[in-house]
Amino acid sequence: MKTRYLLILLISLFCLAPPAEARKVSTKHKTTRTTARSGKSSKKKGRKHAPAIEMDTICVQCNDSAQGDLINMIQYAGFDKKANSSKESFFISNSCDRTLRGIAVNLTYTTLDGRELHSRDIEIECEVPPGVSRNITIPAWDTQKSFYYHQSAPPAKGGCTPFEVTIHTHRFTLDRLPAPADSLSGH
Image 1 (cartoon, one colour):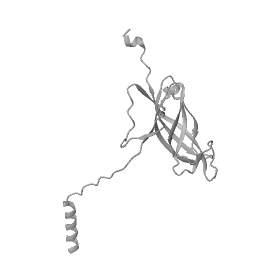
Image 2 (cartoon, one colour; image 1 turned 180 degrees about the horizontal axis):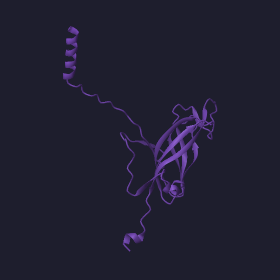
Image 3 (cartoon, helix red, strand yellow; image 1 turned 90 degrees about the horizontal axis):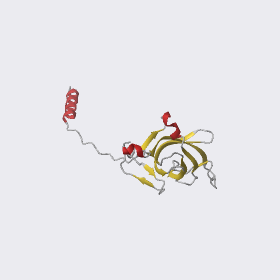
Image 4 (cartoon, helix red, strand yellow; image 1 turned 60 degrees about the vertical axis):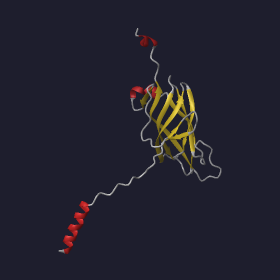
């Protein structure tokens, strides 16, 4: 009987007790933005969403088959990541008639026999004028420096694993084409 009263008393106290204050837990999310001009990363504290698209640009989603011609005008080449490097780089070539302002890509890293090592999505701010290529540098996925891109110089001491990379474009941002002069004058 005593156990029953004790149990009821504890439940009553628990229900009537003031709620404890929630503790604020701070978590830090790193977002890396890379610019082609400076080649330096700028970390924006607290950013939790993609940057707003400026009014004088358009965003092309790469799953939109109607934009196929534009999608094929953005190409990648010259990937490089040495074993002892904390950065990786590649060239973005822009064959369209507008300046490329930003790009969101997926990079998938695989062994030479096709086994996936890592995959990541990254947004890159850049400025690639029409008909031009720019070298882009981003932080390396291989933080322990035990992998190298198979076409980069192999390490002298060995012990590192070569990898391949595939780059898929999710979306990109281009400058808008200026409105024709006739439509501005109202004729």
